[in-house]
Image (cartoon, rainbow, N blue to C red; front, top):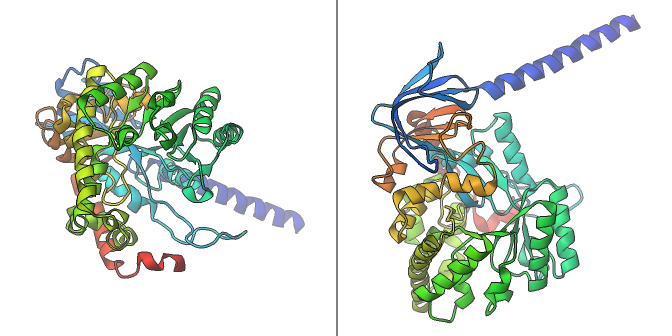
Amino acid sequence: MKYLKTLILFAVFSFNVTAQHNSKSENKQQGIATYVIKNVNVIPMTKSNKIIENATVVILDQKILSINGTIPNNAKIIDGTGKWLIPGLVDMHVHTNADLNFRENSPTQGATFFMDTQDVMTTYIANGVTTIFELGGRVEHFGQRNEIAKGKVIGPRMAIAPMINGGDPNNGGRIVNNASDARQAVRSVKAEGYNFIKAYSQLNIESFQAIVDEAQKQGLKVVGHIPDAFKGQTEKAFVPNFGLVAHAEEFSKQIRNQAKTKKEAQYFAQLSKDNDTWLTPNLIAIVKIRDQVQSLDSIRLMETLKYVHPLLQDKWLTSNNYHKHASPEFIDYLDSLITFHKEMVVAFKDAGVPILVGTDAGVSGIVTGFSLHDELALLVDAGLTNEEALMAATRLPATWLEIDDTIGTVEVGKFADLVLLDANPLIEINNTRKIYGVFVNGRWIDNGKIENMLSDLAKWNSEMKNKFKWKKRREY
């Protein structure tokens, strides 16, 4: 009898393990098939970037199998006639909403406020953003990345950088105020599985330089702010391995009370060039701040507000720190930054400093996914060509992230992260918004599916609008 029970238990265990394995396999492969895009114009975004007209692109096992090769049997055909295929877009500066605890911490306290990961990622995918760089990394973001990897969520690839800051413990991030603590923080970040570090504004000079140096020893790349401590001596921030400045504003705040001219822009560009430090101008951030300072109608009347979680909608409208500080002087200052940052784009371009697209997506007034197209338009308006702007959102981000062997261009062997457009973005940059469909890691999402995903998200947000109020967040 005991032997029979053992056999039954073993059989049940084996069935459960097999069922779980099959379920996982089916889930991972759900939506993955062999596709052929016929008669499409390919903008590969390689260095030569020679357009391949009327091409046949075959996608198999999540990768680009061939361009103008043999068409496999049983492939799903997508008519690309009159359409344009570009690499999936990359946003190099985002703040992705994830589960968090609004209450005081306790030994067993988990998150008190939960975000549906698919809802969070839908606006990225709907806009062809297939890779993001999270610059406020927390353990919850690893969880989101795993949900995407398992196939439970259709979402972008995620690079993640945690923040190291200085000063008061309430400043946010991991707080360090001397070189020894700074180096230990970097080692901890490495042990936790991060590949990048974000340095922040309140770091002192000693801590910042120790972070960048230790990160290089640990094989981590550094992105971030130019700490306030460097005002008047900006050049001291440009040490080896400070690889990417996250805002053009980081330079302009170094000369906050000085004239902001072409000469200063060229000086900052040369500092960056000499140190091999790239730039994410993040033009949309200051534009959106200026708009909010002028009027909250800039938030209230946004067509894309309906895709923002109702708690954040309420925060942006009822607890808007930018609008609280509204004054004619502040608006004039922000306008001066907008003008100077355009000068910086030109100066950095002329100096040969690589420029990347990043938007601060997720912060007040900047809607994830949609903001990338806004940034592309602003970069072109500032002086980049359409091709240079596209390069800043495809090949160059992949190069900086050191994943250019897998994404960033339309080439055989790369992952099928692709955007199929109804019109040519090299002629008009706003054509990046005319999305016919998106390939996400080989999974095809056509515009009908995109519209349904966005519609469902907007509907849920509308239905939940009165359930989530920012002033009551401590109760959640």
